[in-house]
Length: 444
Image (tube, rainbow, N blue to C red; front, side, top):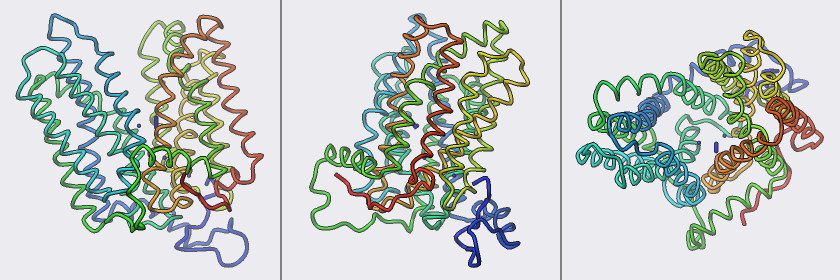
């Protein structure tokens, strides 16, 4: 969820600059920029959708803590890694097929059914919980991962439509969704751990089921007016496998998206994956405490929240330039722990990395929505999620292998430099500078 933006704050589509450059900002535009997010929050249907996401994210945070609580209270010590791996495997292996499904049916119905399945699954788990983790827990993990494979890309299709955002105006929508997501990474685990410890496994599972039920209800009400896009007579006759491949082909056939996805996979394999493996070791060796590691991750999450809001305001013909320049900042986040032990410097680097990575992601999702026809968006967003998610475990394995050959500090410096250089070199492409293409996307 992997896992979907301009510093110049260009005019919005609703108040175009009719005289002179697109970079000109009139007084009306300034107020529009200030009120964009407030306007969305006051939108009744979009507000309902956000409410559903809040309870859904809390339910998502509860499941890992339910498993941790269960392990802590049983003698067998069933492996957490196996349960979480099953969840991740189900998510990663099914997300491409989910995109084809979303494009065939009403995406609201797909999201509501995914929440309903999780509700029923957790209720059954709560009622049958006997104090031991086993096949039942593995099944629950697999089902929840499979439902996430549907709900994640479905939300990216649903949210702008519910907010009645045009192709150029969906940035703030994706920004607010990502603000919730990153906020949940900070608050969710702490709150979920307290709930699971206080209520116990069975009651916490039932509560998580209730949260998914609320999410389904909110999503259904918010998306009541939404229907699936019209399709031609020959669509829907192909298999989901062929639709999944078509989603990958769709991204490949758009030049700037092809370059962006290639860079994303490269970064995940050779920078993000190794970084997640090496960083805890390096930070612990510097400070001898997990507190610094947690503080740095919180700083990155805080930066990501700000980056999402910034990314929602980046638009116009230079959006790719700003997005890739911001993404290059993540390189400093990767290599700075190898260069200094100063906590203030590291905090700045991690905040900037969170800002840059998330702002670029929001710009990319907004540009993809504009570029890709409505009837293909489920597949496109699913394929994008797949490229980001599926490569991460491989990157972590690569990092574990490389650190046995290279010095950890050297590896961080090389990885960080690679992120910065590739992000900036991508701007040699005119399509990347604008995050747009004159070539019409063709699925296949």
